[in-house]
Length: 136
Image 1 (cartoon, rainbow, N blue to C red):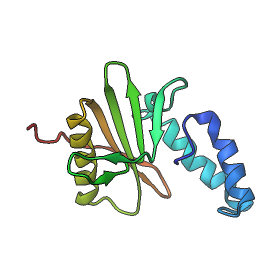
Image 2 (image 1 turned 120 degrees about the horizontal axis):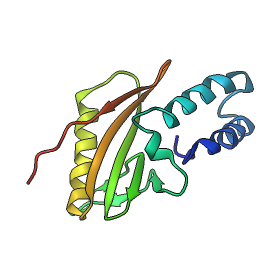
Image 3 (image 1 turned 135 degrees about the vertical axis):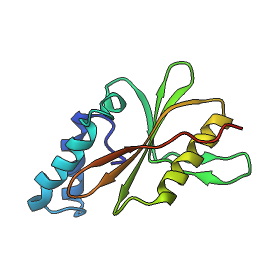
Image 4 (image 1 turned 30 degrees about the vertical axis):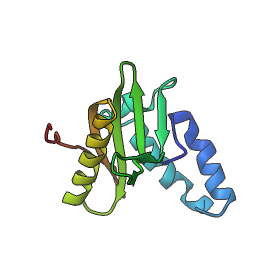
């Protein structure tokens, strides 16, 4: 998902993955379906619009010197941001904690986190909104 910023990126990303051997041509439609399900999901649609400032897998240094790497950050005017983290497998509490930690770090940097999502990728795409973090 790191290379997909908008829906129009899907075909080129798949071409790259097929040419470098990451996926086989026979699996193209399966991967295309998953990617399309993410970028067109009603809860996420606004996160994949053209013209948005977004960063995928960008390192952020925390105030205590640790590095976090959220899967996707989508920035809006007035220092507002949406966090998206992609997962495979089953939902786990630690996934929620991880996203809440990202939100706390971004909040400490002066951003207003307006939404936080976990996106589980598998046979079907499951999008979970992550609850609010504790206010300091």
